[in-house]
Length: 571
Image (cartoon, rainbow, N blue to C red):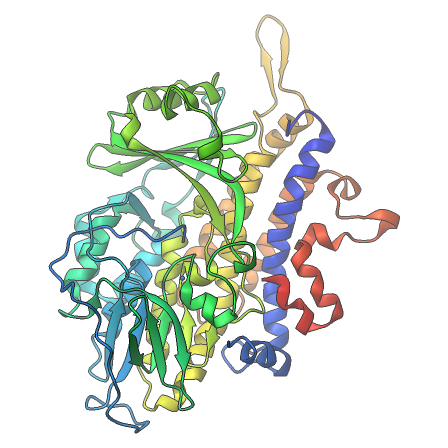
């Protein structure tokens, strides 16, 4: 249905793709207009932030641990002094023991003047969850934060960035475009991108933490703030844990965020939106013909795509991304199981897809709907001495493999802001600086991740091709096929800009990467133009020639027409 007509491809691709790129651009403009790069927001932004008073899919917990599983005790303060020292440390509470929360806890715990407690809902850490990609930007940060942790990660790491990676024609099984992951990393003396099993990564961090830092068996469900700035984390058990700082690292369904923004944890009013895609994932022992040569392959075609990636030690993971309504896992019948269901869905596609599907057992396949969030432009990242981290504030699609990486960047910046703190009176301003340093970069990565999903599923088809066999044959010479062919020489340039942007700005020292911004606007705009055709058909030009802002920003973004206060609905 997506590609039967020229008008069809335009209407399905542009409404979400343009909206997300526009969101990232609007984020940059709004941030520069209302705040300095690292300073205090001007009055309009400050008003919205202060009024915010009252973290993706659910975070997986993975590994066995010998840490205490005792109930979290309620604590009380014994001093009212603002000065921070080894005798009167800054008490940092972290809600959630995901990758970002543990990275933050590990670095903060190395400072004598900071006391860290991680509050984790699950009773124990079980070995559960598949591999996670750590791109070069995250690996470089981990090196900087803890060299010993970095060395232990490398011992269990599988590099993919030093191999062939890219997009293949799903029907013809030919390379369409390749990613150069090695070049941008080598030019900056950074480790290559790769993968590690989530349980292994989590256990490395748990082993690095002092005993007693992680408290299992009671999750944070909210918080309150006293007049002196002291935070009380409200627990599922009904107890309270007191601290000076609370970091909400509790995933996409964040209770900390819900309290901060006076929103429900789930549902339409939570700000979390269904992406339009469901994903099937399989992980198995697999003897691939190109093992050691190819890191990952993205097979493209009309309305869906398939990914195969080497995760090391003879194991592979695959993903099948389909455009479906939410809840399709329960409503779409699969009488013969998920493997045969997908084999039918991908009929006529590459034999590599069918080979790995046939080798996968039913208990090795999972399905989940994908949710993300638009960039947090106006709605707060912080509330006094409380801040959000990772999926709690910028959940994103998995296409770039940057979800965990951006949570690690958050942790790095928070550490930089808090490690030199000398007084509790500085906390709120330090957390605002964290937000200002991370806002634009994280929003851009969110936008790129959603753009990648939309352009691949809704914009790509089998490329048009002229075959000189028994005369001249024209294969797939429809509008979508021609556009996909025209994009072929452009995408490698876009990838270069994208990976240079990801690997260059990991320190988050500048508000805007101007070189990357110009590149994204130029090359990304060209991709959208080719994909969308004439502006009028794309829905950008509305009735009477007016710009259709709903197509650009979505229905929630139109509030800014009546002032910044109304624009808070954008997120």
